[in-house]
Length: 348
Image (cartoon, rainbow, N blue to C red; front, side, top):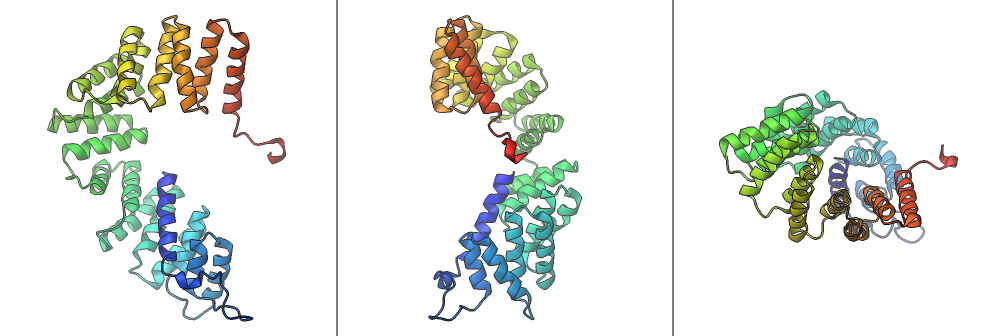
């Protein structure tokens, strides 16, 4: 979520900077004279990441009467980038009061409220921005859909998600999309209901059974997950991610041979994903074949050295073949990776 919103912010800041090429000299005018402070120079500084200098210029502009248009919106964008959401809301509110047609400020006020967890308060501003400008960018739609989901307005949420993808609001695709997004929000019951409605409208819709399988797996219903994944396989037999999930489900059910077969297919279809290699390593450990496990786990470790699950399984595999020193090294790596973001003593 944060990454999506930050991307929108970067777009806004860099877009604002685009019209300020005349200020690229770094704020210097004629020899011995300071360049005049304008909204364009502040935008240029913000666009180059010099936020403190930009804010200093915005403070000077705020003392002018009237305050230049766009100054408060830029202040809000900078506050938002710094994750100072309360200050951002105040700036966006002032910007919208100065210009009631300032769509970006209305949108960003709603987004900032959302980031503060004030869901109900965010919705009217996001709705207002959408009502004023039909071609609003994707991020406010996404945030609005999440807000609706969090307040259990699931139909509205589905419609907002559908707008992003150009789907008919109550189409099978819209139900499936909403179900996928709801599962990300850990709304398992709602995700399952949306996927079931999608299949009711289109029984051959790809990815719907896969989503139902993921919902079942999240509930611990392994047999149900296997049934749904197998149903998806009949509709979508070249889906690499499906075979990886099917292998995981078989592995959890103790059907190790079936897990191996599914995961082999996942690797053949997509050799660039680490997940099936890790699961194959786990499968061969359960099949009492640690040498084979090492083959797949070494490959997974080369692809992603920072995955502690891989190192934990490597430790088990090395221990199974009697390489105690290598096993202990891997287990130490697991601990290091799990605590690499812990604060240092001086930071506590």
